Length: 205
Ligand code: HEM
Image 1: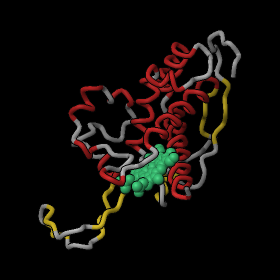
Image 2 (image 1 turned 120 degrees about the vertical axis):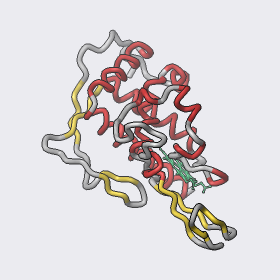
Image 3 (image 1 turned 45 degrees about the horizontal axis):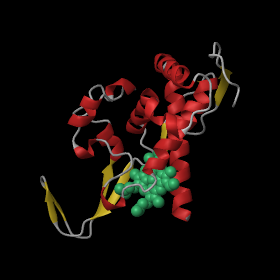
Image 4 (image 1 turned 30 degrees about the horizontal axis):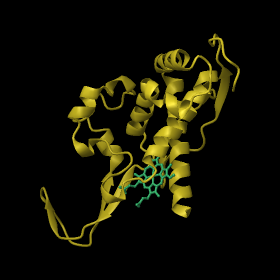
């Protein structure tokens, strides 16, 4: 239970934080998100049944997990001695595998520093090698909470973005601070702005 609380809380909070940050910097992406939310939800509360109809919202989370993977490195212990390219990995050695670097590799992600949710087409996904994108790890110790994290991230983003825009506080300079998870350095104060021109709502939230 302790692992569940630790592994499930900070990670999801951090990815939401980076999503708001990226949306604040990319009003074009935010506008497309609002369009999808207004068209699909018409102002009502998003539920699990809506997930399949929110593909652009999902792409925003997918792309944010690429640029800012909350668990930016995973660790494994080599069971046997193994040659990896020019390196000999002795049995018992600890290996750190950087999710962050892989996710920023231009070999897999053209223009890797660009926040581009539209890159996640079915064709693009299909041609990616297996471990080019692995924000939830892989193998037998893959994140046990992955399906829940998608559900939570997409629904929270949809619910808040339906009504609010988040804007960086004036003068805010944001940088990463890799601790156990990939935090923003310091904090990330943001200002809430109520969205104008919402569709007629059923006022159920
Ligand atoms: C965006 C959210 C999340 C991210 C990015 C994330 C990422 C990860 C990663 C990279 C691992 C290590 C996998 C490996 O070593 O290969 C992991 C493990 C784990 N995660 Fe998540 N996680 C998230 C959300 C959650 C949630 C919501 C829960 C629970 C409700 C959860 C529970 C766990 C647990 C229990 C482990 C340890 C699994 C094991 O060692 O067998 N995670 N997570």
